[in-house]
Length: 510
Ligand SMILES: C[S@@+](CC[C@H](N)C(=O)[O-])C[C@H]1O[C@@H](n2cnc3c(N)ncnc32)[C@H](O)[C@@H]1O
Image (cartoon, rainbow, N blue to C red; front, side, top):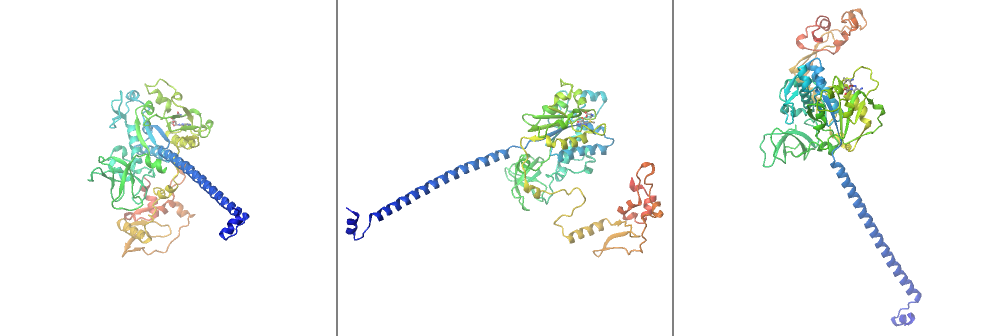
């Protein structure tokens, strides 16, 4: 039937041309639909492969995150304390080692005996009973050098957050001056008002529901954690709600490695004692031991010959010697077959080839070595960069005097000051005021004694010079009257004028 005839039948006339056009349009539409379908398929496939790549990447990231960052250990002989002139200086040297370890994010400090039992007997040096579990070993009959023990003890004391010290460090003669030492100001030494998701704590004796215990993490309230642990244990806790000052805080016990691994924040060092130089290597806490060892000496090869990023490591060990250097430590160790320390280490380095002093002390060498070796280090697993952490963790408040808490208002600060003055009224010497100013509150208002007409001293006049305690005599620095400007004395001494005090009473310079 012709289209014309068909059209006639239906009463509608359709030309072949029209029919062809319609067919073409239909074909085009189908083609377009097909293309759209194909496009959608390709897009879907691309999306799927992107997703797969993304999840692979995040899996890799997870894996990367899961690996602990590479570690640096330093070994220091305890005998360096024996060369200090007084008990205070002994403590100070130990404090310097602790600060160096903290500044350079050291993971482990090994205190080793570089003199040895035999040599010590000859020289009648001090040994003490070692209470640690892994103490002793063959032939050492559970004794440890007292200087090693003291160094280790002070290192541990300074590493421990302040709020936990009273639990872990009972009064001990070794720690007599440790309260005076410069604090480490380490990130894990958190104050009560600091907000951070990890905290160090001690398991308390407080009764908790089954399978749980309470941990004191230095907050107002103890934290309920998911494990029943023995009271007195030091633990690392991850808080469920670190942002809030919650009364019923909950948390999870985690590995002490986790805070650093997950946030990149330095979380302190561990301390162990090695009874000899060989125990530094044989008693490593890392399963495969140290994979890179570096000895330090002025007899070593120059650090300048070491290319940057040359030291590839996962667990790096840096060993420092005592007064006689590492040669003496090796000579004092019977178990070693070698007598040249160079042969003990992968590298033997002189960290300051053009030293000005004949000797660099061990505590100085640690700082020099750690600073100059930084650019030579190439850790296999770097610490992650925690941008936000910088904001959430406190900056130093231990140095540079008293910083008012941000939460304290001006009025609160004033009230606190008044309370302090009530307790300890102070006399502030002021050169410009002839009479002492007594800061004592009266009806809640700070009162000043009426000033007498001030007689301003001419700083260049000969009268003033009389008050100067010979400034340069014998080339030794004395003290000038100018020092009095900063003097704060108890009120009992207020009857003395500043000039009298500086001339007659030199006791305050003791
Ligand atoms: C008083 S020094 C020992 C004496 C000796 N001159 C020496 O370096 O072997 C104490 C320690 O400081 C470190 N030390 C001193 N000077 C150093 C230097 N120039 N390079 C690397 N380490 C040094 C070494 O670990 C050394 O054992």
